[in-house]
Length: 68
Image (cartoon, rainbow, N blue to C red; front, side, top):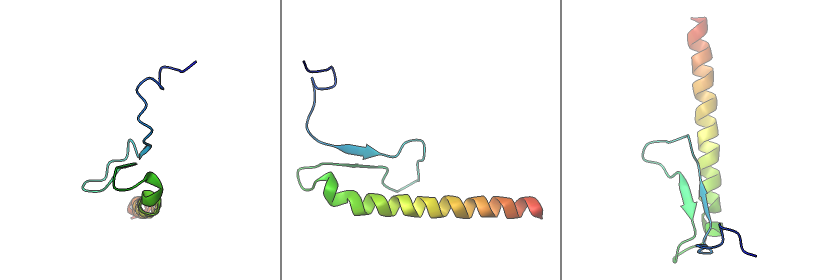
């Protein structure tokens, strides 16, 4: 028995970063006719690493600002 999510399934995968919009930067990666999500995993992982580094930097700057 297929569930309600299978009714309109396309077979394409999508990964989306929600609640963390960064202007001008990708926030979702999907299967397309020209590439698969597997092909885009390096770009997705790089974006996660960059966002983590930016968040760490912002946290350190906020802590420094509190001590001034």
